[in-house]
Image 1 (cartoon, rainbow, N blue to C red):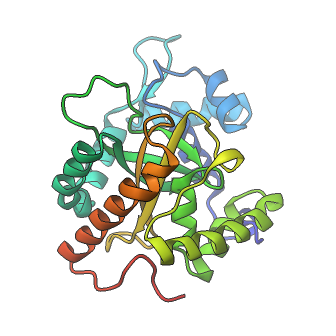
Image 2: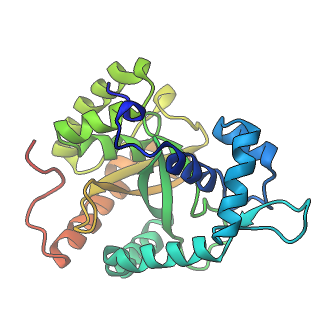
Length: 264
């Protein structure tokens, strides 16, 4: 696959700066330059220059000289502007909250970010004390039901793009998952992985793709819970069809006239 870094239009310094911002997780209590270096693979001297610049621009902040870095007000403002632009999230909320209540599962929506699926919104069952996954949780593209649904919704151009992001030795696995997921989505409207195909044995999940008008690629709506609560039988018999129906309802409300997959 072509390497973007060889393209003269590719701004390597900007890409490195964005990788620093991507290194932060909701559960972090700040990160030092060494931790950022370890997460990004960038030299510590490079990280030091980037964190200084990002602090100067307000995307990072730290209280004292030796304090750890945290996302700053400029990053918060950018995130809020982006969230406000995703109108489908607000439209989906009553539909997905009802689904969470009815199925007693976590409902979420995830996007592809730097070769991983990133949870950007969740809906939890009301009056539930269970600890659920939070916004910012990341899942592997090829080892999660969410990633499988995302890949299955792609056309050839989009598939080649994600394959250029993933390691080269995962190309055959990506092609196999794309074909398998397309068949499953067309037959059932949702996709799930089981056994060794999934990255976590303790959580079961299934997902359905959706194409927001604001995006140039699909996102994935998912339903997940502990494996003993969301069994494979329950995924097939009830939760899977209910998730597919909820996303189909969202398509209808937003005026989309195709179902699950666009023509390849």
